[in-house]
Length: 394
Image 1 (cartoon, helix red, strand yellow):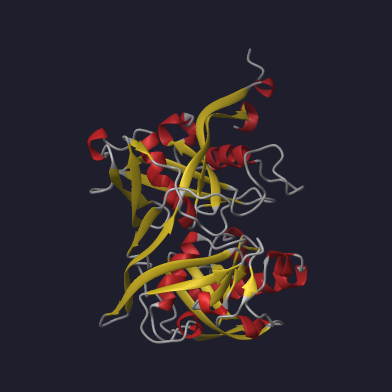
Image 2 (cartoon, rainbow, N blue to C red):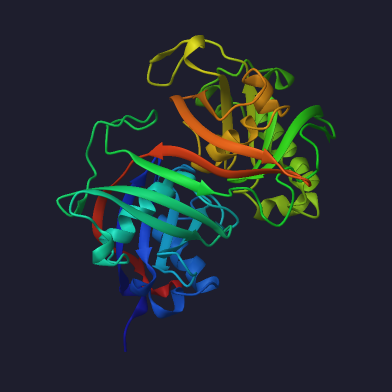
């Protein structure tokens, strides 16, 4: 008889950085059969891979990094969608809860999906040039959207090293342009309330002007000064203030209710990944978290965003898509913070530096539509081999 308590399951996995995030990547065919489909077994397996739930918030016994940026998993499979190469499923793992949130995408790890698809043999060899760019068309299964990833190829292999610098990432790497096609929620108005600016009433907290948008990821944008902030805050300014974090969570919950994401306030507990909450301000000079001086003239606006209850060290990729989309529509809080008017690209300041994003919005007879949002990221394999989890998780 096998003693399941002394044995572990060995599963092929790849640990990758994508943009300013890291995650454990799997080819669906390498997963144990009971983990290949949605359900409690899959969630239990992925939670154990990362090391959650962890009341110590350290992820000592798993692959997670105990931050929202580093507690992520990706599952890739051959696409069942016509005209696409791979299906990409993303899971955001809660640190201190037994929760895998499947409600949104990770824009940063999206940049790593193309390279991983090639490394995993999910792209036909004839689609990979000896030198040039391999275009990987991805179906994002969480949000039912198309992402096009432009992967640089050198001597028939993915080029991972290079001189492209991304604020929030220590070392340079090869640039990977990522196109988020029609990033807005196709089932409803990109602005779910029908307004560019709404009044959000949060009991016992206050009343705020807010822009709600479903593009990239559902996001609530507020004005920094309405929260008592300048917009130049770094992580410790927010994350060391539990009262501030509690306030943001209350605002996020009531914003989620107004956006129609949840039907009651209590349901926000199961929606940790969405919606995001961010605050914007007009350009100001500040020092980024690495000491780099960001001049007022370097940026069009400042944006700070929270993910999984904490201020993000840089900017989530999907939130950057939301920023690009909102900035391209005259009259949103994001657009007004950037100076107003018609915009096709902006450069915004975040805690780790600056980022340029672009989007083109058109107003049809019914509502605003963004055809494509574009940004550049980088990605590389950090480690590949096998991850092991105790067999008694099932």
